[in-house]
Amino acid sequence: MAKIAQFFVSMGLLLLLWTGVSTSGMVNPEFIPAPATIFTASVELYRDGVLLSDLSISLQRAAIGFALGAFLGVVLGLLTSRIRPVGYALHPLLNVLRPIPAIALAPLAIVWFGIGEPSKYFLITYTVFLAVWLNTDHGASHVASTYIRASRSLGAGTWREFFEVVIPAAAPHIVSGLRLGAALAFLSLVAAELTGASSGIGYRIQESRQFFRTDRMFVGLVELGLLGGLLDFVFQQISRRVVHWEQT
Amino acid sequence: MSGGPNPAVGNTQSSPVTAPVAKGRVTVQDAAVQFLHKGRAVQALSPISMELAPASFTAVIGPSGCGKSTLLNAIAGFTPLTGGAIGIDGTPVTGPSPRVGVMFQQYALFPWFTAIGNIEFALKRFGMPKAERREIAMQALAEVGLANKAANYPGQLSGGMRQRVALARTLAARPDVLLMDEPFGALDAQTRIAMQELLLGIWESRRTTVLFITHDIEEALVLSDRVLVMSAAPGRFVDEIAIHSPRPRSVEQIDDTFIENRARMLRLLRHADAAPSSPPSR
Image (cartoon, rainbow over all chains, first blue to last red):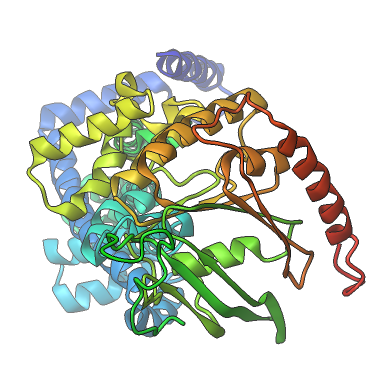
């Protein structure tokens, strides 16, 4: 609750300052529109019907890409960390892929999958997958040896050790990988929508540039900021419950 | 010795015929552990031999780094031997097994399971119905006085309570041999005494073979039938003290032999610490 209060105080101060600066005439309102102008632009977009449709298509892309990437990342992370030959074969790949950002892959994605939805899913899945894979792999390969020893001397077999010891022990890392993945899903979403899309928040920002509508651009930025922030907050709340034992 | 023809031979000298085959005989024959550290061979355990009789309580005491924990880890099957052999009731140790229960110094309870969940983990190997498992786990918790903490997670328990759950969990798997690696070492003095009292009570009714590693002379004397004193690295057994104090014992009961044995062990350990054999190690 204190966090929420802090959020509103901070945002309120920002809005005040912003309004003050933009009404003082110190900056060109064409470049930095006042909050009220941005709000009017968002109402306008809402009336046109594009605000909600952009929002829903973007969220859908992020959700599908995230789900695919998270699933693949967790599965592969568990495989590379717990099965030695798989880890041996794939760990170098992880280090080579990691520095390649989604935006650099966007042109290739369009060649491969066309301008439709699959290229967006691909880029988001790729980004989320890498983050989740890395974290899962790290978590599951650093399970405290005491847990493994205790499990084995208590007579647990390989499968029980895997599901009741390795996965819970790695869970805090997996969850933080998912949280990072969720944030990255938004980043790569915009990368995907800025390069070849006909809908979505990123597309709308790009389109607004052609009409020099900075106010509409800001609507898109505010949407991204609020959505990302909200998502992270929700994720934090969920993970606090899932890996409850990590707090003490 | 480990491949001996009949492991039951000589189990109980008093009743040679029709004695029930007591389980939990541990035979350590020239066991050695060596590993490579930065390209150099390090002797973690120099060849050592000993035997634990079924239902006996043996304490091993010695300075840090003498190899007592390595010895325990080797018997538990955690650390492979590079020489010699370890057998339990005639079967060689090749890896961790539920025949050998281990109680660690700390942090071995699974924090993602509740107290009762941790004990149920140990019971799952028996493949009993869920309701029965829960009931037995509950009894095990009651035995260590924590029936009312069943639903608590380890993070919500004190250090002493955690070790009580750990003891209950280890015993729930019904091991033939119980290895304890300074299990009360991280506890404060009062809790430690309470734990010793609890362990005495439980052990005297169950009589599982115990190997108990400790730094604490008094703890060794109060709990065990026999104390093995180890020298500084390379660790060897420099003395063996039989404790004849009658059982059931209590932590508060101190007899004449206690004082005498304590003085003897203090002397030995002082010499063990100042072992001249390897100058760079403490």
